[in-house]
Image (cartoon, rainbow, N blue to C red; front, top):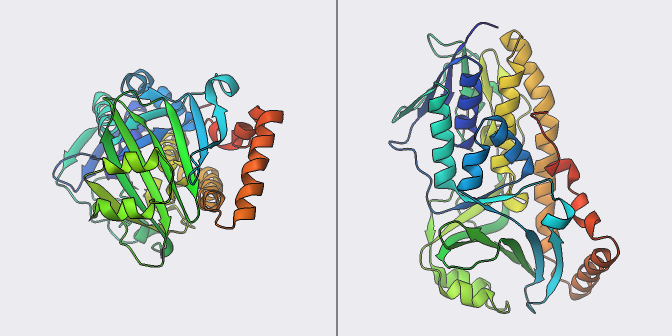
Length: 375
């Protein structure tokens, strides 16, 4: 295929990864970001093996490794007692796979530099208003919508997502704390759970989820009172209260369930990442799915007419995204057992499985983590 002129709306993880992959294939790529600066603040992120495979294929694997901490285990904890339920040893049971803890800011910087080094142009303060009827922008061959939850490009290729409130909210905070073990800990309690893991630079990332009736707005920019977070987890055993006592600035996110787009492309417009399949955070797959989308879109455009390539991209990615979105939505129920007998049975079943066949606990997610779109 001849070189295409491509504009990507949005300089997030998916948009910058797509820019890198497409520019490396010889396309003339421009990334247009409506924000005046490209920045991601205040949040940690997990890059799981399926996402790390894309980073390596983009030539960014070493940069990811240098800017992140490699996870060694995942530990599930009874939040009410503080007693471990089960620990999945990643080094023992999946030595060939790598999970990375990284702050969003350096990840975005790695991807931006990768895109620019590949020849893409990244512009800020430039909001894309997509034309109607599936047409690209004037002078372009393709418009890629990587413009997030409320994508304007999605509205041109598919029905806009009509989300509903899941009656769950999530607080996010980062604490200064040294000597945090390289472990994901999930502290589980009735109607709530808390996830924590280390970040480079001596920091602890916290995401705390609570079921509630009261509505909360979607988006990470909404600040909240740390006292409300501490009150929500007041029944949890140490060390959770001691962590939350250190929280100063905290942000609150109302969790909404969005539909996966039925149609991912129309004419010369196509969507990826959250624009196509917003995902609840209970499997930490939003960024990883966006990385997968970016790679498959670029690969699909090799040697095919644009419309044929976009159809192939959708056919490959939509079933995968729908499976991950559904699994993430189901995972919250597994963490939030409120009925004491259900908690007892569930926790002891995990403990028994850990004693008899520990590798099977992690192996349940081979379909997710061992999926490598770059093969």
